[in-house]
Image (cartoon, rainbow, N blue to C red; front, side, top):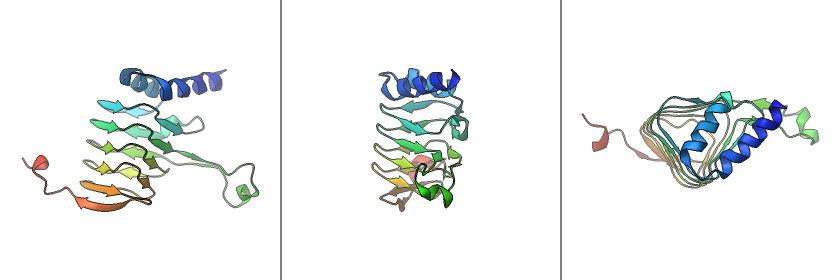
Length: 151
């Protein structure tokens, strides 16, 4: 019964018209939300019941159609003998902006004050104060000396 409820919550998370509802559902599912968060429509997490593997720090903006893959399982393919199912944590730091249609693979940490360009596929950790773009994503800009971060 709990699995069914979680599946329903995941559907509501994707389709809900309001950010506040999406954030509350994400918290109900067990994600570690540490501050203000904006989640646009059609946010999808493949987690196989381990939403607690997702941590999002404060002041994060997530664009529409973003996918986070915490769970991986090639079943029913025979490849499951080579690549057994796995769950890997995802950590999104403070002041991160994730552009529309981006995909974040499991085991990734996105550093504070970073930008993920729209349509990027994140296959490696993203250093703090960087802009990454592409498939797979690569660093395209260093933000560490930007005026916004000077005191």
